[in-house]
Length: 162
Image (cartoon, rainbow, N blue to C red):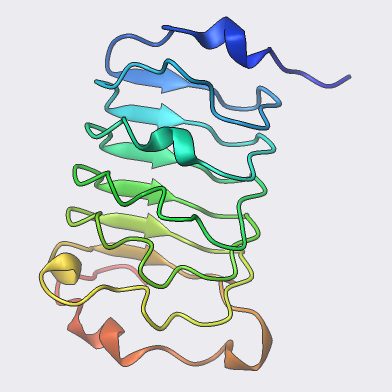
């Protein structure tokens, strides 16, 4: 039996700081999410895109693990400057270069178990990586480039977990 609710049932739901839409069988994020949300768990769905995140500029924690996102995110995270923790684990992502440019405050990032062709360009130039402390890459890259780490990784001076 497939669990799930219609997207319409979430209109103006979730006012406050945190919301869980985990394992709801969602193919799309619902419209009408509170733009003041600071934490959103949308893990365990069948999401293929996350464009509805654009108005959620106050998000600090975002869990999009165990979905079907890919091959890229189409700039969906560009408007999330407050994000400090992001999980994209277990999706179908093949490309992330430039996708995290707007996430200047990231401290924790999990991109494990994806289909990334490369990690190059994942870490934007400038101050972006200065805050990153945890980076999970387990089985993130597919193919022959699996064992290569980008030179940018060595600029992440606060990294304590890889």
